[in-house]
Length: 221
Image 1: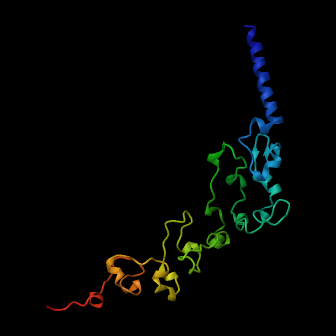
Image 2: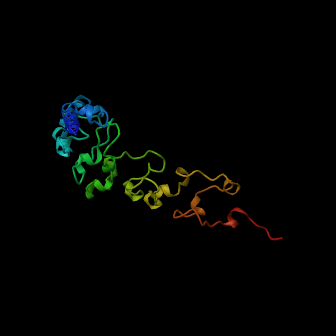
């Protein structure tokens, strides 16, 4: 019976030692992994971002990263090259909750379920359709002739599938089907020269109307 108090004391001392080490060397005892490159210099200063028993908070992030400068300037006020980063959208979020999207640790994310990927729903309503403020316009042959926002064809949840309306094209482009579409190579289409719209409609490729009298003169026997 005398051994039990001794055992409890040993267990209690070990627990106290673990707790003490967690406060003195938190980066070794409780860190879920190495920090991202931008925060390497504070790898041993966990309390620069974390509050004891409460964890990190967006308020601590904003203490170093001014919301108005995120994506535009470094924490030292040096402008970020526009060639290396997209235009900042952080200033247009409905809520400044850095922790909801970001995790500075590259190792196993203990709070992975609490993280959420970027959603256009986080943006203020006034800027949700201003796609070009963050995204560069595609340079492929379909998009180069368009002067409208992406949301006219694409949904915010996913880039594909998309609904394209030929009415978005300028009139001069409507007759130039081959500027976007490859000409069919089957035996029938090889004989036909001209715009696709002589048989097809821009609303749908099928059904199509083919004029035999125009391309095949059928004699009477």
